[in-house]
Length: 170
Length: 420
Ligand SMILES: Cc1cc2nc3c(=O)[nH]c(=O)nc-3n(C[C@H](O)[C@H](O)[C@H](O)COP(=O)(O)O)c2cc1C
Ligand code: SF4
Image (cartoon, rainbow over all chains, first blue to last red; front, top):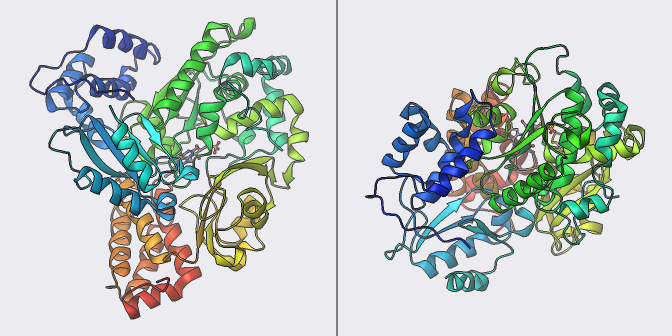
């Protein structure tokens, strides 16, 4: 389980040395005259670097960094659900409620999560530890019901297992 | 018969060492000895059809790439795996990434593409890590790069993560996304084979399609063509989810009776065959089959097409009698509304209307006219949009009204569902 860095939104966004190196590798994947292709990977990286979400400042920084008009960056950042445009908790708990998970009891799983975290989907706990979200199919349907927390999938869930998983997070 | 999943149960199957110890990357050498024309012929002979959903013959698609064209050519692997119910590619990506890489090198060689991209859904973070590690290993061993296996052929490969948008699984949405834009599909024609990634000729194939190629080269198109049934040759992975005792990804020959798939592979329907209400046979977009049809239908492109549904991605979603069909469809309609990219009016508005009407139907506030309205909206979406997401949204609604109209009527008349 990776933990997110706790960079606050006030700090002016700036890529770390490590990120700058990763960006060089990202650029090499696409033709030199097609740099915009690197936008999605760079936004993913920016989100990891800047506290798990993308503020307006972060988007402007990426635009300037890549030499793109800011609107190109806003368009992409708002189109894809994985770019968080609002702060999220240290653990982003995303429970699937689409067909296969629903057939296998995702209502109970979502209920257990709401109970345990005392928030509704879309909400974040006061201590900023958890954000809960209801999401569409994540492609693990034969192991339904499932949820994703940050980078990891948790599959074949039961109500008991959910509580245990949440309790065990560092 | 295991072709695509032949290695996934081996320990460390994702590593190059295990892959090579089991004969891996021999088909690349063989393909290069055969020459590109012959590779395309062999794939045509196999009869393999695209495993991503549309079922287009792969060899034919490859042959559309223009020859003697000065532009670079590209190969994109569709690893977006977004169709609800579908999770078959994931096991290839995480357990046998080299099989996919080998298939891609062969395809790249056949069509003259020197650069490939694997577009993997963003949520598959761990799978992308595995894939990247395999790509790195292949580069380190000279399997990818400027001189593939010392044969003077160039093939580069990169992994590109998506951002959580189902529509990017549509091939031109995928291309737009790969170019760093919103994933809004393009009007076709022109087709990607002529104007695809960066305006260049591009082949796009699903993970499972490409992962089937090494075996086709190794054992021959005729061998592969003899598996399965006519017009639906080879094996297919069915992701069986929902109300079965042993949900799972099962690779079987095409043409298998659905009942055999469920009973002999997936452990049977929960509560027994008589507890079956219906099966969505090819991912959430495919119209549902009622139980009586499930007893006799075979799982191939032709039979499912004739039954008014489709094989799609091979995601078999099993629904037992405890389920309210109206509620199930309402959930799917919500999904399509969320995923419409919004550029075509019939899809943007139509998916919104479908979701809204299904919601009120489920809440017991629907009317008899609403049932007709649903059919009318579906008719106004069908074939009138840029991409097939519109039709996909109509599929579950049309299928459910066709097979379970009495449940819709019950909802209208009693304000609640039949299933209790
Ligand atoms: C809305 C929509 C979503 C799609 N999602 C996927 C997907 O996740 N994976 C996939 O392989 N094909 C998907 N397809 C099908 C692709 O457009 C395309 O037909 C396929 O990738 C071609 O590869 P194949 O011929 O090997 O199947 C989707 C199509 C539509 C209309
Ligand atoms: S059919 Fe729907 S998803 Fe496809 S291009 Fe049109 S609006 Fe977008």
